[in-house]
Length: 193
Image 1 (cartoon, rainbow, N blue to C red):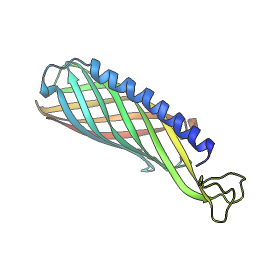
Image 2 (image 1 turned 90 degrees about the horizontal axis):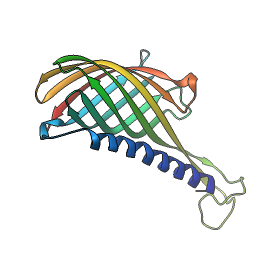
Image 3 (image 1 turned 135 degrees about the horizontal axis):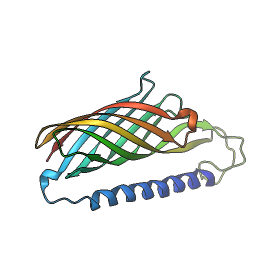
Image 4 (image 1 turned 60 degrees about the horizontal axis):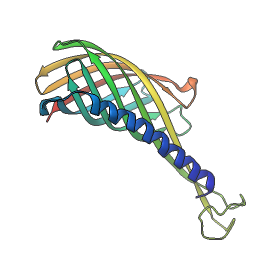
């Protein structure tokens, strides 16, 4: 691992901490007085061509007309330089106070991808930190991160006090460039614990 890889990992960790801290702060600030306000959720989103998807499983806090969520997520887009990232996804949704209700929301995703090793035996760098530079069959691993935000609109149907389902659309804007932004259509469910 060379110095540029360490800088890239450090940059990713800092940005992940900033986004995660913001999302955790949002969860902490959402008023909650009952265990019924806490829930597990899972969601899957696909684009119209099936080239991109986002899937997330995590925790949700719901109170009155606001829900906050934070989960582990996988984002895939075949148009990205590195197509699949694993990371943290979270956001906030605003609802009306009905069992069947529209909602609007905003969310963020930060993810990491460690690409395949590539041969680095002629780059004048000690890539494997063993004290030898450019030895035969020396490899380097590229570390990549993605950061994205998305507005969303959707519908939620509350089945009962403990369960609901949702359908939404999210427009993902990432640091991969405007030509790689994408729209997903999502289905989700949540269960209180």
